[in-house]
Amino acid sequence: MQTEFTRTLGIDVPLICGAMYPCSNPELVAAVSEAGGIGIIQPLSLTYVHGYDFRDGLRYIRSLTSKPVGVNLIIEKSSKKYLQRVHEWVDIALEEDIPFFVTALGNPRWVVDKARPAGVTVYHDVTNRRWAEKALQGGVDGFICVNNRAGGHAGSLSPQQLLDELAPLQKPLVCAGGIGTAEEFAKAIGMGYSGVQSGTRFIATRECNAHPDYKSAILHASEQDIVLSEKISGVPVAIIRTPYIERIGTRAGPIAKWMLKGRKTKHWMRAIYSLQSIWKLKHASMQGASYKDYFQAGKSVSGIQEIQSAAAIVSNYAAALETDSQKS
Picture 1 (tube, rainbow, N blue to C red):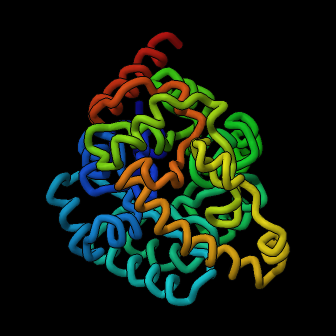
Picture 2 (cartoon, one colour):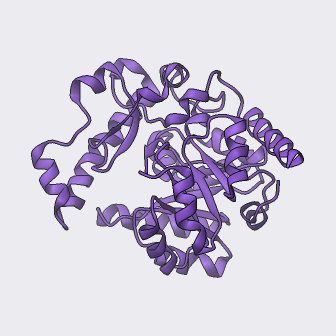
């Protein structure tokens, strides 16, 4: 089961529990790491949703597992105040010996420059080769390859298309999107990916403290129920189609579209959307369908049939990978 990804981080199973706002509660992150994969901490989820001081939250997770965990860092320059907070999170994470960073939506150079002397591995979220090449110039160690089956900020390419585009860059690649079963996990590794990132599958777990309505929506959704909305952050976000979503639509209005096309105004519009969505996503996730808001999910919902423990998922995925390797 060892890949370049697992050897670098010292984990047993090449499986990431992706960072999810608002669903990355400390118990879920720790449970995946303890089971042999690696859980990723989402700072806004840890602090704003679950109420921890960032350092205290990291230490709480460390009290639940001594195995490696990671931190997700959204580094887009849409807000100076937010970016300042990201810099603080990086410094605290380094002080607390977090070994893995996943960056997104910006130039990762400054993160790499801080992380490398401490021996921290940095992967960057990418949706195509153009962004991967830019991140490569920033010195990243590998890529989280976000495909067109992912929840949250989805890409436009299939897992195979992304693999074909990025393999020539000769960096470890992690498949992100559409993995809801052990068989799909083993297939992705068999394709040539060094690891898999799963988010939606881990929302439907006992350790995730998302509202039962959210988990039920995942269990009952099909691939056809996953739609892309421009109204959450200004770029396509995969969510479950509900009566509320059908009523409000998924496309940005004319003013928003105009702002999203501008070099400077696109950052303002994304910030406006994000401020609105942070609250909506938190309440929908924590307080259920009465809020009729957004449930983020990917097309992996089609393979998710029951609520399981995080440990059972990691174990089942590992067993499928071992079986697959024995066959080959």
